[in-house]
Length: 318
Image 1 (cartoon, helix red, strand yellow):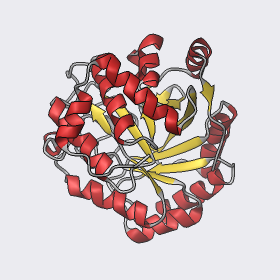
Image 2 (tube, helix red, strand yellow):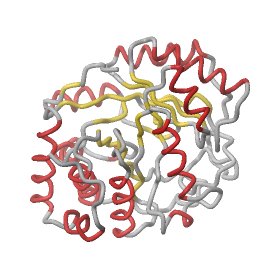
Image 3 (cartoon, rainbow, N blue to C red):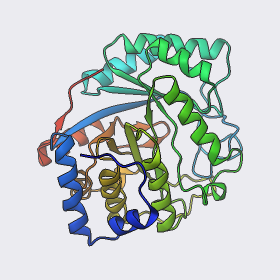
Image 4 (cartoon, rainbow, N blue to C red):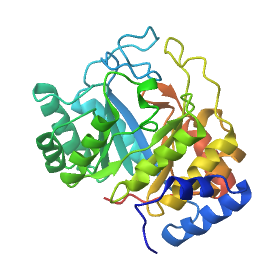
C-alpha cells in the first residue's frame, strides 16, 4: 500500500466528513492491512519530574503560573523509576514513557540522570519513550545512545490555532524538535488534543501536519482535554464521542502504519465508546491510573474491558 505524505486539506476533509459508520468501516479495513485486529499496545506514562514548568500551555496543570492542586516533585531517582517501570511491564506494558515538566532539555546534572534512567529502563527489555520538551541535536543523539526508542513531542493543534493555547513557544519549535529527534534516529511520537476550543477545520489541519511528516510519526496520541481547575481551559466542554471517533478513524486512514493511541480523556468514556475507538483504528492506550497528573482508568478496569471486548495486549518488542 502506498503511504501518502501529501494529503490535501480537501482530501482529509472528505474523509473526515464521511458518514460515521462508513468512515469507521473504511478505517477498519486500512487497519487490518497493517495490524492484527484486537491487539493493543500497552504504554505506561511515568512523570519523572512534576510541576513548575515555565510554559503557559492553557490545558496543563503543571504550568507554574497556574494555581492548581498539582504538587511539584523534583527529578525521580533511578531506582524509583525502575521499580515503577518493572511493575508496568509485569502488567503488560511494552512501552515506558518518561515525562519531565521542562520547557527544554538543559545539559547538566539532571539531563545526565535522565540518560542513566533511560539506559536502565531500556535494559529491562521494553521500548522507552521520553517527553522532555525541546532539545538539541546533540541531546537527541545522546538519548538515542543511552537506549531511547522514541521521543514524544505533540503538536497539540493546528498551526493557526496554536497561539490561542500556547504563547511561550511557537508551532515551528514543535516541528523543529520533532525533526531533531528523527535526525538522531529516534522514532517519533506526536499527536494532538481535541477540545481546546479549536474548530473542526483546525483538527483537519492538525492531522494534515502530522500526515505530512515523512516518515509519519510511528505513534500518534489522540487526546481529549481533561479540564483542570485553575487552568485557562477549565470550563471547556467535553468532546463528543463521535468527534473523537472521527479524528481517530481519519488518523488511521491518513497514517496506516502508525500506532494510533487513545490517550488522555479515557476515564470519561464507557467501554462501548472505547470499543468504537478501537473499531476506528486505535490500537494503543496508556495503562495505569494516572497520566502524568490526570486520572486514567485503573489496570483492573482496563483488564475487564479487554476481556469484554476480546482485546489482547501486544507483546514486548524493542
